[in-house]
Image 1 (cartoon, rainbow, N blue to C red):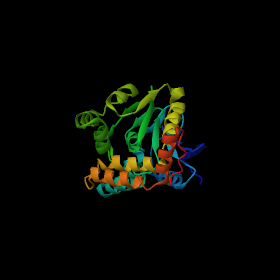
Image 2 (tube, helix red, strand yellow):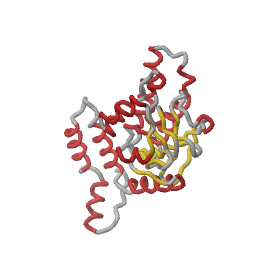
Image 3 (cartoon, rainbow, N blue to C red):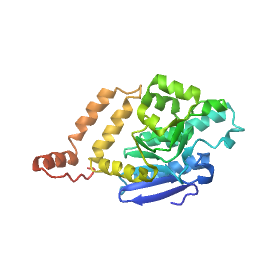
Image 4 (cartoon, one colour):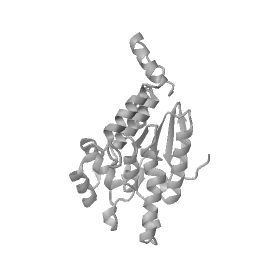
Length: 260
């Protein structure tokens, strides 16, 4: 599959999805969002792919927000449709993936770019990265899930502060408040992100998928998270991977999971 604004790279079981609009600081226009949907759909369907790392081309930006030039002629109905399409096709699509997705934040992650990173299951960041939701400076609010996911990650008070001030924060500050999982020197960001994902990929894939589903249920008012966990826990007992995990533990060897 060929893309105009996306680069795809494979490294073992890791699929890299790279936003390739370096001259625009990897801003997320509608065409790029559509390509992101297709790129993630292909990765989720490919059995050779165990997990995904998404990052931005170059050293300046992960994704510096939406492409503001597209907003100029959008009315209320258009804004509603834009947000709904992006949520369904990209952001929620990532959140509900059964494969782990890590955002490697290699520079600016602003507005829609930070919302994209927050939709991923984990976030790593370079020491020089800057993060923020700047929408109120345009007379807008985050529209791709930012108000909800930031609150889940850092709490109501801090989320309101960051959204209402539109302040950018450093990677170190993001680590302190729980917005990112780890930080690294710029040259070490990708190796350390790969190492994190490789550790995850040694675990049972069906159990990883079940864990993602259960954690997501905590933010879904339509689900009882405890019941979701109970059912997912029970289902694990019917998998071949459970048998392999127990056998490997007893035999004091590393398990060989097959995702079955």
